[in-house]
Length: 185
Image 1 (cartoon, rainbow, N blue to C red):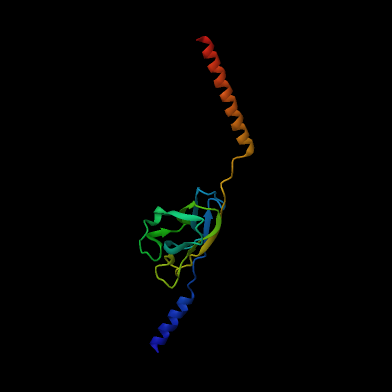
Image 2: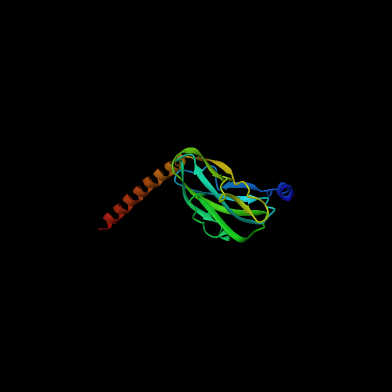
């Protein structure tokens, strides 16, 4: 009987727990980088209503069009915990109570023309993955963004013509200077 009362109380209290009203945002520095350029994607939480203590997630890229160069965790959370799975994890105490919290900045190299999807995902059945709060249960940490790597634009025809004209004028000037120098000898 006492056991059933505690079980009922635990269920009633547990059902009152709601996750923090947060939104995962992936913000790229550009959606259309040129081949050979570096670009970044920032991962942040918006609408935080609790104390955010840490996070853990995996990341993936669906294409060879761009390559991950570096992962920079917000120094507030300290270094990556190095768990391996999840690929990125950090924890601090006390946590952040800010409404918007920057978690990670990813830097990529655009390698070849093409479209690809960058994804972050947390498996909430894994105790090391998700968003971790002081008062709320672990929250989802899932998002994606599509990046379209563009070819490097060819120089404009007008620029090439101007460069050619400059070359012709330089050669003509050089020849004139040689004739003047030869006539003085």
